[in-house]
Image (tube, rainbow, N blue to C red; front, top):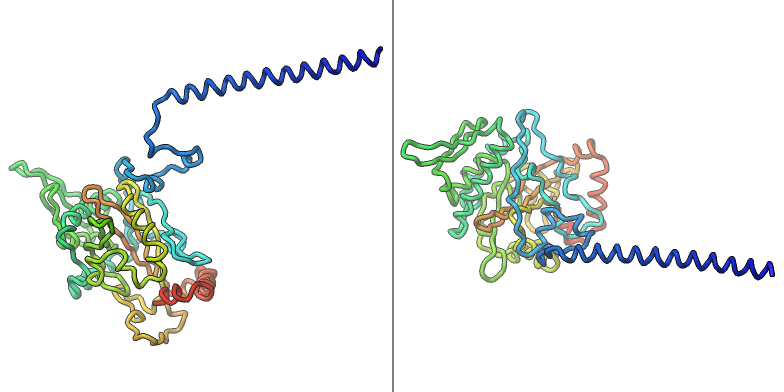
Length: 383
């Protein structure tokens, strides 16, 4: 009897526990239902905004590039550097920015979201860059600076954006020249404390075409290539200022499609062209991005390297320690009015023996990339 009573008591306890678990489960279910009902009663987001929780955490101006028809706020202005001086100017080390050197090495855009502060960087060699750029433009003319008629207005738009950035970011070097004349006409422009040059124009009517590009060349160390989508749905290069190409001329590229321009680049048209064109066409003006490319050259002549002029089968006799690693840090930014894509390029040259002294692992990584990557890619990287 005692054993039977004890068993009944245990069964009752188990039953009560199970009943408690059941009611707790039902209560939790009702809470979840209320939460879901409240959520569903709220206005739904547009289709382009629908994302998983994980994607929501990643949302940034960079990820907005991937959304067709994305509309977002204008790209922010940079933070001013009130104490900036050229004597102490330093760019970021482009060898380490944007995954420049990767192993295993393969063709990829490897692009990163752009910080508003980093569109145009200045180095302690700023004055040398400007002087060299001026010399190349005067000697080479349309080979390095040109614009098709369809791109002329975009050159003026680019000039306005460059002036706005430079005068905001580097107020110790540049003044914004805005004033109203007696006849009510409003003027805009820029004054450089470095070159002592002054440029001014009627507001919203900046110099266009090559004239606008020439003013840009007196403000930044950077080159600018410009491209746009045409009616056939493909991207074409339509102008630019390219004084430091290293191994090609703007005149060889202008008017050509992205496909034709990249014929010499191994694997690009086969593996990257479709995705790159799609990304550029969908790019929102508020979401530019940056990337870097690299090559090994035999001198520090940014306009054209000697190694690029070797005949087919020719050999470079420069000591490996005297070779240079050239890194071109690039920004891709869509201009808001014209929709033209401005490719900004800032080349940096470092001698191999200096790199070895400062960062001994970098030459070892380069050697591994060159020895173990596909031969057509490595041949292209060593001009």
